[in-house]
Length: 588
Ligand SMILES: *[C@@H]1O[C@H](CO)[C@@H](O)[C@H](O)[C@H]1NC(C)=O
Ligand SMILES: *[C@@H]1O[C@H](CO)[C@@H](O)[C@H](O)[C@H]1NC(C)=O
Ligand SMILES: *[C@@H]1O[C@H](CO)[C@@H](O)[C@H](O)[C@H]1NC(C)=O
Ligand SMILES: *[C@@H]1O[C@H](CO)[C@@H](O)[C@H](O)[C@H]1NC(C)=O
Ligand SMILES: *[C@@H]1O[C@H](CO)[C@@H](O)[C@H](O)[C@H]1NC(C)=O
Ligand SMILES: *[C@@H]1O[C@H](CO)[C@@H](O)[C@H](O)[C@H]1NC(C)=O
Ligand SMILES: *[C@@H]1O[C@H](CO)[C@@H](O)[C@H](O)[C@H]1NC(C)=O
Ligand SMILES: *[C@@H]1O[C@H](CO)[C@@H](O)[C@H](O)[C@H]1NC(C)=O
Ligand SMILES: *[C@@H]1O[C@H](CO)[C@@H](O)[C@H](O)[C@H]1NC(C)=O
Ligand SMILES: *[C@@H]1O[C@H](CO)[C@@H](O)[C@H](O)[C@H]1NC(C)=O
Ligand SMILES: *[C@@H]1O[C@H](CO)[C@@H](O)[C@H](O)[C@H]1NC(C)=O
Ligand SMILES: CC(=O)N[C@H]1CO[C@H](CO)[C@@H](O)[C@@H]1O
Ligand SMILES: [Cu+2]
Image (cartoon, rainbow, N blue to C red):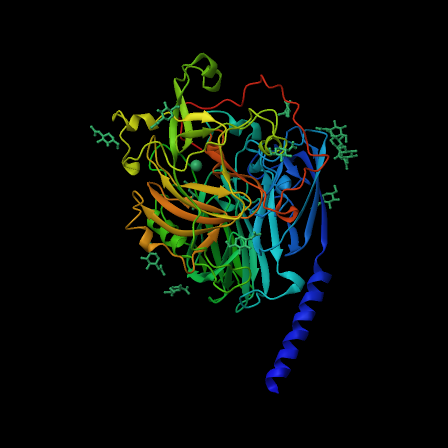
């Protein structure tokens, strides 16, 4: 009898859940006015494109299951798209906002309405422009809370706090793309440079806390090109989600986020009443050439209620810029929350095994057709390579429209499952005749076609062709399991045995360690055209990109619908050259 009652109660609860979830699936509508505005984070006024005039842009709040509708009105002088970074876009690949991959840009004086459902994920994500380097100023938070006000899989925080880290150049945003790339002038916390810089001493991010309370920090690294360490003096945090996937609670005194990554972490105000600085500082995995702003730390303040001028003021000691072991310890120790909301077990059977070398090679500028890509006088420039291919964006039609309408000549479906040469990846020898052939990758628009619902495993092997650094690789349309991280060359026997198939972390963006590797797995169950690229913006024009085309499934429900009728079209002159690229210069 008690069992039956239990069953009935469970049934009633289930029916309640069903109704409340139907009732709660809302349509959330927003307007984004993109326009050029003046801002002044440091000492001078600077014109930037911004959404609704603010840096960072407006926060979007939804519940899992909602439909988000955003009309982007382009009243700026730039071509733009908006990418919903980390959103699965199930059957809505057209709404991914990847310039020349899923759409042509929204041109000045035009508008486009993005409309998509957000299901199967909860936590903190971001939206940002996906054209040239405009995400430097066009970005903001996308917060996905559980349906129907449902609980988090951790103790309810007293308050939620958004922390957006940004990289700031005190110049026209268009100039950031000029080569050699200028060094950035500051990092910002929620648009504020704080007391590390002469004109912003009184404009510092302040978080007021009450002793004993717990706060949920929603942290976004929106920096264009920098991995960042983050620390709060005398406080540990408990990481509960990364990239909008719940994790096993993980306690740490320091965090590291690559560009594009997000972290949800609990902060308990458990210290003596006082003021505690929070700091962000760059993690520079590149061991050569890369320069950073003169003052590399930006601070904010955690102030306890009741703090007086007599209370302690504590500053955190930050890891060194090249502290790889701290970065690696933090990144590699996080695990997925098995059994938590939206958790699915790791698929054991792999249909498609790929081994991808990733790194920076060179491109010769000597060919007459290529001279226009290089700096005047430059003989060669950097070239991003994935299995010896360097991606070239289509110029007249998006990849996905070419795919959908069977337009030939836009791309080839020959992206290889392996590099053309196996070598000692972490110790590249340019003078070796065979290895030298990995130095100058082929520039082309090459995609990998995936059967619907196939399980894909990718070993991403970082190479040291010209230089080596951590590349944060970002996959559109999916989260992937990160089964393992390591240094040196991936060993299919020794390393495969150590992969975590039980509770791996999941991400949409993962830093591939300098001179090391990661192993990813995902299920290609979302038809469409999906970019896979380095999320350091400076490496995009170098071609550190590839794309997957996931084929349709057997039914209309598993097929990509046609594009919306008002999808922006290109009117670009196909003979126009692409944006200029650099000679070998590693500063950003
Ligand atoms: C942006 O500004 C417009 C008015 O210019 C307003 O209607 C809209 O709600 C704002 N959007 C957001 C997301 O705040
Ligand atoms: C668009 O910008 C122009 C100036 O370039 C301004 O006059 C106009 O009011 C703006 N319109 C909107 C809708 O923001
Ligand atoms: C958006 O663009 C369409 C044309 O594609 C135009 O008819 C409409 O007025 C525009 N809406 C806004 C709000 O600018
Ligand atoms: C950098 O900022 C910190 C914090 O404000 C300050 O203590 C330090 O003197 C600054 N260093 C330089 C080189 O400006
Ligand atoms: C932070 O956590 C570490 C390890 O769990 C512990 O040793 C340390 O005392 C904690 N620090 C604070 C300020 O709670
Ligand atoms: C984290 O990873 C490192 C290896 O990078 C390991 O030595 C350490 O024990 C792990 N655990 C914690 C809690 O840091
Ligand atoms: C493209 O080709 C496929 C197979 O060849 C066909 O099924 C489909 O209808 C074609 N699509 C268009 C828009 O022509
Ligand atoms: C050149 O590199 C290839 C591939 O790594 C290797 O097999 C070969 O032994 C190398 N040759 C020399 C002379 O080192
Ligand atoms: C890589 O691509 C370049 C350019 O097409 C080619 O010359 C080179 O031989 C390729 N490397 C290998 C190892 O096949
Ligand atoms: C995808 O494959 C899994 C197992 O391989 C199967 O259970 C599932 O039904 C498939 N999904 C679709 C939509 O075909
Ligand atoms: C915007 O894109 C169009 C083609 O799609 C091109 O003709 C135009 O020059 C671009 N404008 C800017 C400001 O980049
Ligand atoms: C900079 C820009 O694109 N300005 C245009 C914005 O849209 C209005 C009409 O809504 C035009 O008049 C502006 O020229
Ligand atoms: Cu990169």
